[in-house]
Amino acid sequence: MKKTIRDINVKSKYVFVRCDFNVPLKDGVITDDKRITAALPTIRYLLDQGARVVLCSHLGRPKGKVSPEFSLKPVAEKLRGLLGQDVLFASDVIGEDAKAKHDMLKDGQAMLLENVRFHKEEEANDPEFSKKLAEFGEYYVNDAFGAAHRAHASTAGAAAYLPAVAGFLMEKEVKYLGSAINNVERPYTAIMGGAKVSDKILLIENLIKKVDAIIIGGGMAYTFIKAKGGTIGNSLLEENMIELAGELMKKAEAAGVKLLLPTDTVITSEFSNDTPNKVVNIMEIPDNMMGLDIGPETGKAFADQIKASRTVVWNGPMGVFEMSNYEAGTKAIAEAMAECDGKTIIGGGDSAAAVNQFGLADKMLWVSTGGGASLEFLEGKELPGVACLDDKQRVPFIAGNWKMFKTVAEAEAFVNEFKKIYTKDENEVGLAVPFLQLAAVKKLTEGTGIRVGAQNMHFEDSGAFTGEISAPMLKELGIDCCIIGHSERRQYFGETDETVNKKLKKAYEYGITPIVCVGESLEQRESGKAFEIVGNQIRADFDSIPADKAAGTVVAYEPIWAIGTGKTATAAQANEMCGEIRKVLAECYDEQTAEKIRIQYGGSVKPANAAEILNQPEIDGALVGGASLKPEDFVKIVKF
Ligand code: ADP
Ligand code: MG
Image (cartoon, rainbow, N blue to C red; front, side, top):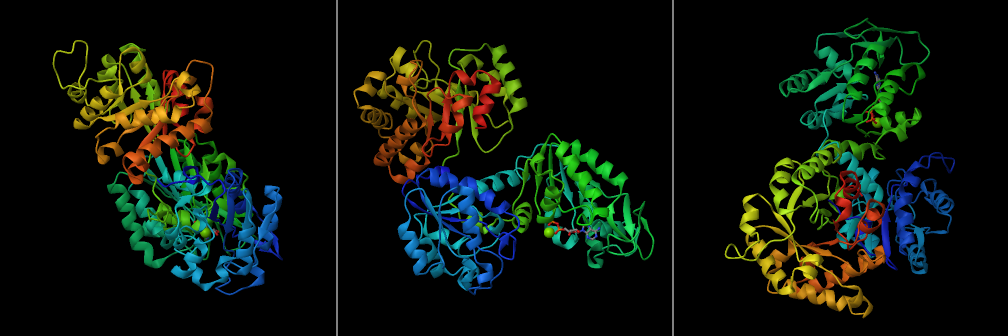
């Protein structure tokens, strides 16, 4: 998981943002501004946060020379309109004008550099040039997914000189395309089409390992039909791929993957929309005729497979959809995807164009903005523009605390319901349940990735401690996390920083992840000493605990003054305190250790406020009370 712009504080900072503004131009006019609008969420967010935004992009192929026809000036104008504010335009990339404009930038203002490919050093990924680009920012942001498969100076090189994070578009591309590769929901169907087998071999080979079914259509299908012994007339054929097509079919069979090929096809005599056409059996295409689309029977069979799937990824049209007589097959697939209830993901430039042409783009879960980049991503390759970004040290962790609620039967009912609506994604999820419910919940959550924890434990292994539960007892049940020092235990059961510290040490000894709670009361808050008090709790709780253990600890900040009092802590207040806690941890240990420690917020997180709170840079999750008792509420928080 990569860091994103949510993980950095950009107020009054210069932020260098690589966008993909490679828009189609006709006579200096932008004919399609999708790429610009796709970058707006990132730009707007940075401006709203008070950043000084330096935008950079390429346009076309000026081959390292200043070429006025490839100027980004029209993009700057378009951006002004879309953002409703001025965007300074530099007439050079790293020259005097760019530097002057940079120095003029104020908080919440943006500028655009001239086409970065006016310098040949860009595509050469020249380190000196990368460094000069990096001088425009205090942070590097990559939002140019469409160029992420290129290791150029602005798409990857510059990241080496700055803290580097993903923009929102980049984040979404990686998340949605990633959901076609990791943790897929089944049945999973891949649809392959387009012109050539040779373009898609790596893609087919990568996906065949993951899918339940693979559909092959478009120009590439005829090579497979040939391999099966059909006659294909003048249809697209890659002679040197016939053998491989046969092997791929065998591989699919051996792997138990259903492989669907067209059974009928629309043929004509010329590669033209004007010659007469008809539908025939795809195994028997007459001489001098060529197949330019799948037939209606095939369209229906493919659609049925698509609609019965929980994940569908599509790369490559089913026919020559650019011609009206041969668009029906591609349209049938697009419509079936639009109807499918599962995750529908489209990669590939022409496939995306087809879906847009049919007006169905917003019916899909995700239509990738990157043609070549999405292809390489789905092939399983690491993209340089993604690899260069900093890894997220802290995966969000959302834990429910059931306190003294729920019988075993109710706990089981919760888990069964929750499992139906929860799908494992990148965030970590946990449930801290009463002791007597641990065994049942642990059993039912086996294999789901949901962590099960206790709400307290004793600091001794065993002994005369009537009514207590020890770490080895939890471990015996397979429990690997535990809330320690919850405010209610501090308030009602005499928990002190001293006992918390002992319990932490015991937890590490048994490999149990502690969720250590700290926080200040109303009185303490009003005394103006909240930071000092919480800081002292942290120092005492972590006393003589080594850095490697501390790094794996979860801290939960509970603003006790805002719980059940009608007072609320704002997201900014919550973030501020979590930032202070991290500072204290950095003093106790070092920056790196503090960067690894996850800090949850434990102040009445609900579905309605989850996104605002959890998107704060210093907040890495939540310890959820009341809202964790209902599966439908809890799942909304988990998926914030
Ligand atoms: P994508 O960009 O989605 O990855 P490709 O670039 O691989 O897709 O292929 C798209 C092209 O394939 C389209 O221009 C389309 O006209 C062409 N194509 C599809 N089916 C056929 C066919 N039967 N004969 C010739 N060309 C085809
Ligand atoms: Mg293409």
